[in-house]
Length: 125
Image (cartoon, rainbow, N blue to C red):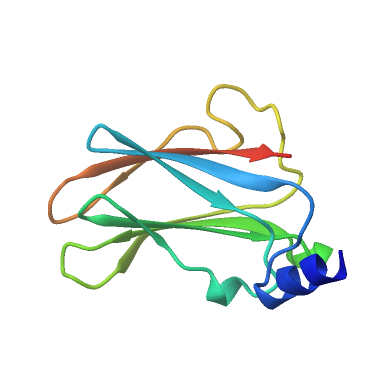
């Protein structure tokens, strides 16, 4: 048990508790981006989605005054990630918030190509 807790601290996540699951749809493909609470939000990496996007979920639980879920979408058309969409959600995060989770269905468009990415997120235990 001590080793598990030490590993969780080493990698900046908590060993127990809820997580966030984001469902991302791009080009007819479904992607899943999951996040557990982190101690260091600046170390969270984004996940490549198709050819033109990256998506990142940062889940901060503590301290309570900073608790939030931050969602970032980056465009990659220029070769370098460029932030094109950001969303911040503060607690409470409803667990059963309907068909498209606590975020609702979001649409993000890559500005130079016009590519569309859709996402929605839910809290899971």
